Image (tube, rainbow over all chains, first blue to last red; front, side, top):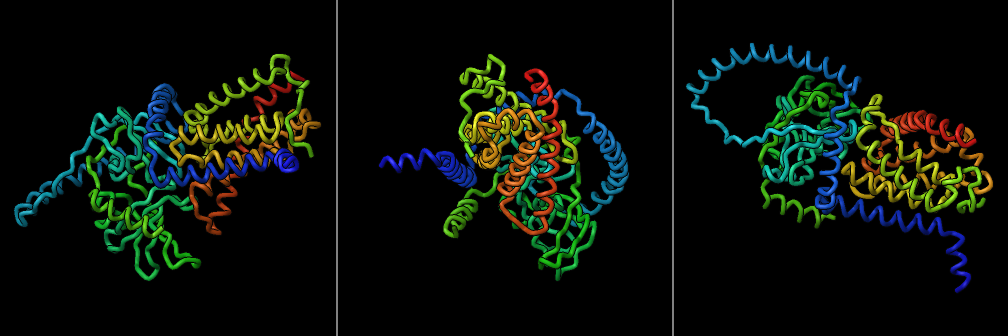
Length: 278
Length: 179
């Protein structure tokens, strides 16, 4: 017995390391399965207050980038404004001709971005809108020109958005012209990519990437970005399709939260299926 | 190699000879650095690479207090950092603890002063920060494809280098003051 204690005493660092390692793996597994929002909601307030305090500090590198982006956005808006004027006239005529029915619009809650956490690959936003504004986890968040991410945690006054630029973000998407479905995700080497598109299909640069009608989380056909580069990989049957997002995260100050909740019954079925598969 | 904590750190200033005061100082510094790391570090990002201030403290603790203390600090700091950055709980804790555990093999009671106050400290810090960044990326990505491994290594090395650069200032301050 004494030798056993002596053995433990001699290798206590290893025992402590292994025990804590087991605890870490269990915690990772639990937080990925249960989405431990309650625990995180405690820290949202703290982080939001800190972001409020330090948010006023100017970041010269970002400001320079922001100025360039704003100039580009301005020019693009001018161009779009001209296009819109023509489109409005055209649209009115088409509506009259085809009795085009407007899709049920989903209410949008406008929220201020009070903080940004992490960098590309791990990017989260903190919004000044929470449970008091009927914001719930899973709701899609729109940037000025397309999908930005989804709400993952909420507290009374604040909400955390997991952006497209996060390793854990997965979005069912479709190519507008090619009509092929894939998954939009963040790749550490290539950035934002559309995965699971077979190399047997033809994909063109500039094709629109939209949320898929098969998506169980987001409404269909929300713009995500444009196809930037199509890379054929010899080690895979699928293309690596790089997506140029339609907006930059640097200049974001206001976003829209779609008060849309995925079908709970469908989510329940999917969850049961995933659990059985495991 | 003796990896246990040194009994007396003679070269430390008198106030920090008391282990309780020293640990209180470490805890306070860890809390401050947690805020700095999660809120202010993005301002210092160069090509999305941010310095790891908490690793500087972690490596210092391991080399001065021993491997076991380092592991416990790494675990606690990592858990708090996971909470502040909304990562799955345990991700950073595991990566940080493993990095400090490995650095701990170099913690020797007889060489504590040499490890802390010479350029060896930067080598240990560089080693620890690389392991931490590499493990963190692997744990959050949970896929290991050959083409991204090279990228991961480059990213981890650049992060470790950037961290080592930031360690120069507090290191110079401490070594000059308490030499």
